[in-house]
Image (cartoon, rainbow, N blue to C red; front, side, top):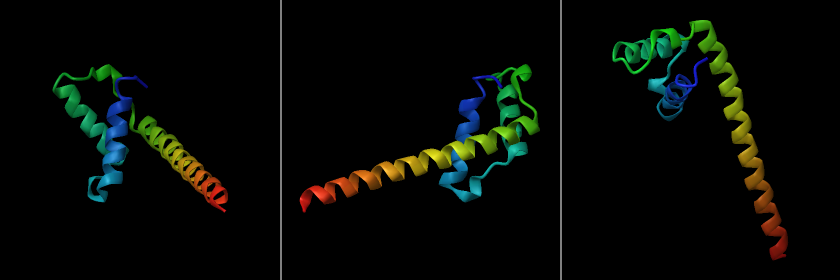
Length: 87
């Protein structure tokens, strides 16, 4: 997948996290990318297939969950360390 495409997919993905009414499925993301091709911001050759976007969504979703859990654990660990120091 083209590196030019990924920031757009990330933006569409996170738009759905901010507002559940703005959620995009793979077909919706491809439709938005097609609009960017129409506006000459992207080349038609760089457009991925719907199946490729579906796989990307799955992988990126797992990555975001991992990052979120990791941040939570880091925060939780730091909080516990601070609490122990105050005793």
